Length: 590
Image (cartoon, helix red, strand yellow):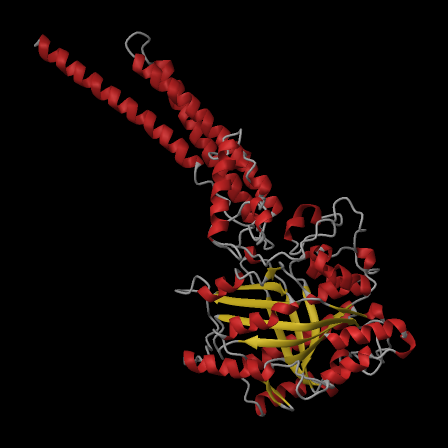
């Protein structure tokens, strides 16, 4: 550090003879200075794998499988990458990559995404339109590609009973031009698959169908290279065991593929030897972690270590984050009609400005700190806050991580209440739990609108800092809310009908208890109706803002049910006394 300060002063006083950068570069080139710890990660992974006695699972060839697959994406701070890698490799082995210097824990991955001049595919993926596709060419390793994967990702809404799919086929790099120009010898390749590779007729037919569809998409939609993603990918998975799969992408760069001659499909990615302008590349400041869970049968819950990692404070869940969408919004701002919600996050603002994408951002003096549209409602989903209220030091939060995450004593006193169970939040300790419990009790007692009984009219909800995750809202959720409202309303109307019938047919002189019973049921029926209305409005607001956590009220039904049972019990006791008195009088008369 002393040399750094000396050289810094030297460069300041003599800018024409700067030498600090030269010194740093020479230092980094020394044999005893290392910035790559891949071999350490690989060795640790091998040690933990041996301790766990990992074995490759048997490959399941049965296509008729019933699983619930979920994919969640997170941002990871650069300084936390090593910690996250270590936390994962204790439970999953690293998928080793062969390099020229040996085995490495990561591999360079390039993907060129295609779209047309209107960015039709971009807007379809952003809006999550049914059937929206992403079309890309992917290759692995440094240098020019040799084997290229043509991939197509199709989005489908899960509430329809269909699942999103990813399909791909492999070609040599020399054949990419013929595929893009619809000159690929499909019939000849299919015959080779059957004769040389032993593919069945069904496999060959499915392959041919996929190739023809992807070629047709390029021609019909006039797709051209649009965006390129480049990153180092580290994969964690037990071979043939898809229960938990984790990938970590670091050094993420997004490169615009517009602005050069494709030469009729011969050039489909930029020349790596030519320099890039600032508005042609953006360097994402975080790593991207993707967790894929395949749950079914007895494994209906994710492993405990996955939950612990989510609650570690190192992961920032970003719902439906897409590298392709972020790159297009940042580097092609003049072509996009709408942008994803995460562009307003304070932590990535500088990288967007450096890439010339300032036109998609709000000004620093904005009143709300977010752009118009959805972010005015979903601002709570931003992991690091917005430009007006940045939270760059916030700890990672996810679906079951509460909002009480500040570690400083002053902030703990004013920390927002949790949205889920009290014991789930990052960086929690006993003091945090005590503060949370005390604030919960005090807030309920001070609430002027019976917030303990009915949370929808309590100030409790206004103080909730929602986690950065988002619950998927399907159309059936709205209908379920309406059905619940009608069921409660039906119960209230039924009680009112019973009370009105008792008042109408009971004797005015000899049925005093019946009148009291009916008058007790009337306010209860009214309470059922009011509770149904308020619960419907409260839950509708939570659905609208997509706030994770519990959407049920555990206290209201208990209170109303207890009051109703109490009234029925009192009426039962009174009736028993009347019967006993009647029997006593009849006995005396006889």
